[in-house]
Amino acid sequence: MTAPRPRIDRTNVAALIPAYFEERAIADVAKRTLAQLDHVLIIDDGSTDATTERARAAGAQVIKHEVNRGKGGAIKTGFKALLDTSAEYILVLDADGQHLPEEIGRFLAEANQSGAHLIVGSRMSDTRKMPFVRRMTNRFMSWLISRVCGQRIADSQSGFRLIHRAVVPHLFCETEGYDYESEMIFIAAREGFKISSVPISTIYGEEVSKIHPVRDTIKFFKLLARYRDTPAR
Image (cartoon, rainbow, N blue to C red):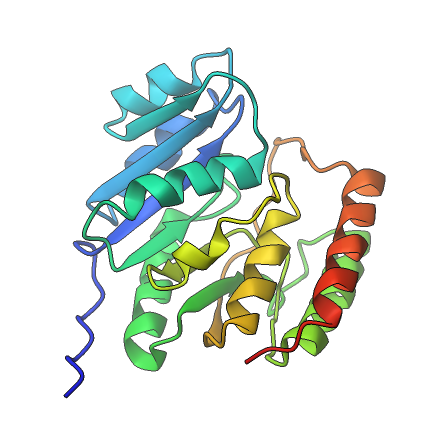
């Protein structure tokens, strides 16, 4: 008989926050995340500012890369560390304040209700604050990814997501940049894991996007072509 899955709560979910030059926001994000979850791990991806010091002062565990490896590289470092803990799920969110830690409970509730292995936060239920070009881009890319995956992905470009530990060993691919977040979805679908979504707020402040529009778009379409001919289980 298969053992029942444990109830998902703050004690068996660990937060993973990749950060690069985020000294302005990291302490606030870390403190607010610690109010929701017991374990917060921040990967400082080669920053030379006070990101690490402020994250540790806020009470978070920190692993620091000596050189910048990209967002995908930072997330994989965190995955490797957190697989050695008892965490049932890993909650990934951004360090710049675009994700509200206070909405983490929505992911936990969805995990308990649906048992989904990958839960992606969706900003598409209320796009009034989202710039028009970004809104259209997100919808188009999410539509493409949904077709390839054979599952509906409401907001494939959202980095606010909850990943079951069973998925994580499959995610140590070569991709290191922002396209890793799309590849994560492709891999989860290919391996037969259930993907769902929860609504999250659309937050934009003074942060400057680190995404390079031309370079990262080219990477995305190369990635899409690679997985398009790889059927999901």
